[in-house]
Image (cartoon, rainbow, N blue to C red; front, top):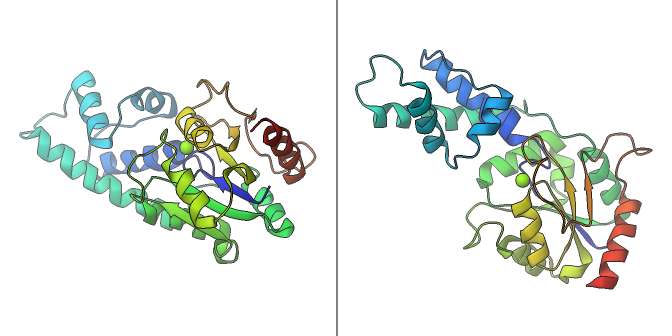
Length: 241
Ligand SMILES: [Mg+2]
């Protein structure tokens, strides 16, 4: 195993629960709206893709705020505010890293395993997450493949194929860490082994193609996922590839 490739959202941090959801709530509060999306409600709203569409759906269901003359304008204003608040949350380092990420990254660095983050989310946000939460020393060890650098988002394999080519490694020497079904399908279509760390909003998804499924990497190496375990998983998968 020559490289560990991490998805960003849901793997390094629980971006939806701790980032986007909080940013929506800050945008509502800053606009003097009495709206608060709690963790279970936000889980339901995630069925609606796109931030603007999600807010529109919510107001259509629960009623629009009194005195709103133009729904489109309100949604656009809220969305601009939300995007700004989200970047502030990310860049201020307020998002908590998921348990075990830093430990596993340090094990990989010590063992000379290469590291990358592969995400089709906003590149500025992904880079800020790696830099502020893992620190500049670790950030230097990471290749970051993010944003609109590939034509098709996950579940298409494009982002992992790009990483394979840029790292100049065969797919079977890479192991991917993902938290969602789309991410799993993307890694598998690229011909890579895949560990799933289920996150708050993906625990119920079907991960039957995964090589291993856990609820977290875990800070304690005695109970968590270690690099040597991943190397054993990967060796088994490699025989099948
Ligand atoms: Mg994810």
